Image 1: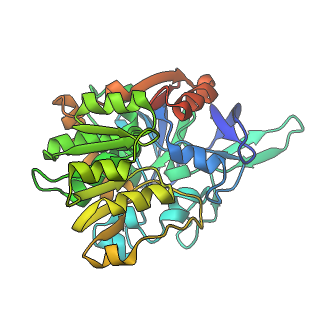
Image 2 (image 1 turned 90 degrees about the vertical axis):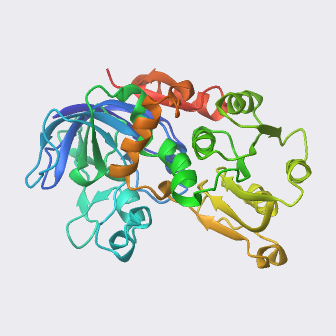
Length: 375
């Protein structure tokens, strides 16, 4: 079928809106008419080739839409279902068998290889191609998080779509599949703080602010947010942060330790910057836990004070908020409906053709979470 999609053809290059062909769904797959797709920091770093996803490629992994067709063997999803899409996991590796699907041993191949799984290897081309004026066909990489949802239609799998009620606002809740799930899950699924636990969050983007809202649900105190964009810090306060510090104006480490002289129970770094991670780690009290969410370029290293580490402190990587999407995403939908997870305050909508503007606004801090609408 004919679709429009945002294609990245060179490292650091633009997202080009192109006419492509999308193949029919195969075994275990579903065809989704995309209503909306959030733009995530991960889309940008893949464009910039932080990870070796092959180009040209169609990205997008916060898709939401309506199922138009299902492939052979699909049992739990049907035509007409409204779905949110999330990450993929193999279901059979040791992590998956333990229920830790975010840490699937094949996470990078399944979500970043640009290819589909044949049963033995990730060697099946993505279902995307472009018909050239010469009559030849150009294969386009895709299957990004098993969706490639920066397009009018996408092929996903039965395993990585979450069926939601038809009254769910897909245009608002599309980003639950990655960024908001990651931030909220880091609090509710990974750290699981006791009531009254002290928490520092570095970075007030969509992941950090999702963590703020989840920390309010968990009744943490204080909830400290550190960033360098005043508008983001102001928004964090309205969402429940009890203290905010602009690290371009004050010494954030000293400020936190003045507030909590023994250090904090938990810190969460959403920036992926080594120096920020080190600072967040230094804020911990004995036996405190620092979670790392922010993605960094392959090979990035961070240094930590080993004596500080010795006193029972933990640095812990967190993928996708330790989420099981088919369970956790409906919980987030309910929190949104109950007014406890107001992500609509973080979202601005753009047309697919405005993708470059949307990314520029996200990078400048003018918008927290851009969401592209396909119609």
